[in-house]
Length: 234
Length: 295
Image (cartoon, rainbow over all chains, first blue to last red; front, side, top):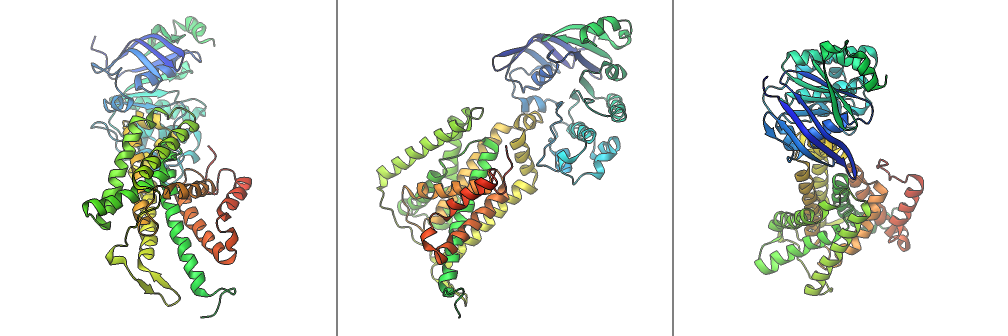
């Protein structure tokens, strides 16, 4: 097995006094799309923020391409080539769409060109001069994903990119994720919606109470459906 | 020339000019406060003391080292800005996650210490600082006599204010600043060194206060309490304009200076309170300030 692009082991994280992650272990290999599944409060978002270095404090090991990043500040982690798209999308109200799109600085060679991003998300092109937060929810999500594709980061952390979106937009996001995989991006995805996750991912990790409790390959998803229903309480 | 509303035009325009000068100082100082508050979430009560330091460092450069006004305009903002960076790195940066009150108390305490040290060293009577030779004298504008130095202060303040506005609202660097004001953690996760940006922003805001101090030195006496007196009014200006809006600070600063000047002409008794009266009215009608967003 090739060495993992992202290797997380024994990861603990805290927000102030509250201990959220209790030893998370998982790996993402280059070119994979991997999801973190789990109920609300299982620690999926915190895991992503911990990889990115934007939680209160964290311990354990987060190796990216063999480099330990646990003690790095988040801007240095980003410059290793990791990009994060938060659940709340994080579109800036005081910036217009173009400024939002061009905000993240390039951290490596080989990011997508702005033209390619417009090809993926044609809506953005027509809204460049709008205030960022005047976009619809779907357009904001496209902007939030689009802007991190420019930077050259090859590992994308996408936190619930389909949340609250219309089915047709969810399909568009799904197509985009598959296309990004073909373009060589590696993607870690947090999803509540495992039916959506099943259409894009190679493997799934299930989280409960701040730990990874199970790993399911995508082609074994059907066979594990009963177990999964129990994990997710659906 | 005929009187305007029963006021001799010389007096009217004279007070308008004074109002513009005061407005220029209000605008420059409230602009610095707005930039600092936006990114650091700190109400910088040291601002008046840093303005005073600007005037004093200019005085020291001239009297101790023979370095004149023009060089002072460059050197003073950098040196006083560096002391701001020192304060940010050693003290302020520990307070960002706490309530505004802590930053306010700390910066107020630092202001008292700085003012005390200068008063101890230089007394409180004030020291003269001459107008640079190139800007002495005045120009007859036809409707009034304009002292050159005062005209210069109005023009250079406008230029600096608009340049700051341009950088923050229209450039890439400014988009980082605006974004970090909204969500510093996310901007940091894009690979931008936000802590360093915060430090430099504080240094810039402080440098702006010191620059204002240099501009003020030839107009007012250089004295340890010159900032303490002014900063109270500037905070009223900030409250009226609304914390955090760049153009709002500039417009409110100049506007209130002019209103104050006109009050001196038409109803001099109210000239020292008019800004506070306006503040009360604005707070009643629009608590976030004329240009502010509730936060």
